[in-house]
Length: 347
Ligand code: A3P
Image 1 (cartoon, rainbow, N blue to C red):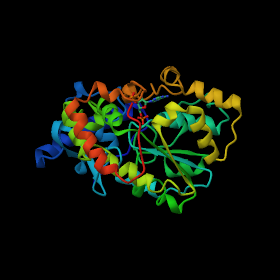
Image 2 (cartoon, protein in one colour):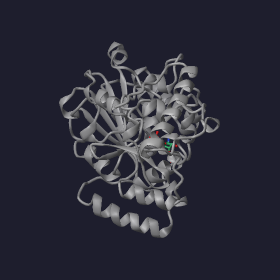
Image 3 (cartoon, rainbow, N blue to C red):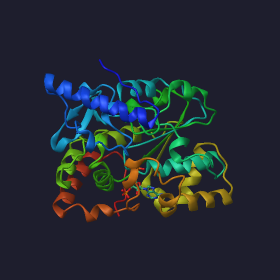
Image 4 (cartoon, rainbow, N blue to C red):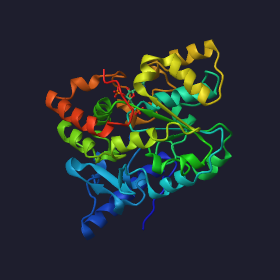
């Protein structure tokens, strides 16, 4: 099993990428496995942070579906190539502290918004001046963008903020009910999630530069075949444990409708007192337009995040779904959600 670790400097990264390309060509000649990322050096995208060779670790495990959609399976669930076996293992075994904050959401549910809010909650409304959002949190399961070693994480002062997109049974630090970390889960209506995810994921280096049409993506989403798996299982898995003492479940739509109320509830859960002035600061600084302009949160330090701030609203799915797609999805939604007590606002 070949393991490749991310070198630190840009030159080293470029060099490793070229070695990787040579290695893949060699492998391709031998046994025809994943080859869609094999590109001549002149089409290498040095500005992008993610490449399989540097971040996918065990290349032989990568799979390629229709329209080049690239993924790996962990516990039978579709995951991005950068959720490597060793990063996943680290995320499951990291020692969590009682005052750590672990936030989780299915991709495109507003997790970066929540992250910014959390950073400000634990810093009395401010953000560290020498950092950006990516430096202020830790995304252990990922080999790129925010990765830290176990030693680095252990050395950090409390409170630490951890990010995850994992379903409940694959959560950070092992079983959430058996660790002391405070877990915040954010969910968003699945129609907006599916659309946001499509626009974000298409063409990304970790998706194999997926080039399917929207209808193809929607089918994969409904089938639970997009990275992070089935939306219903993900959300309902966390929803089931919403009353656990160390779990706080919230929705994107509620945050958009009643920001101050949701912020106060979140702060209470985290046992942090916020003054009215701090509440106002957080509300203003984390508003959509400020987040997308602000150097701290615009995430321009991660090139692949350029489509992160798109609409920032409820109901943009209407611009994407056909009536027939919407009706079909509603039927599935009704069936899956019936009796769960969980309801979303779709407009
Ligand atoms: P859209 O693509 O619908 O605009 P995540 O952070 O989990 O990847 O989610 C991204 C989605 O959250 C995007 O949705 C993005 O625009 C939205 N978002 C990010 N910051 C936001 C904010 N401050 N207010 C409202 N929505 C925000």
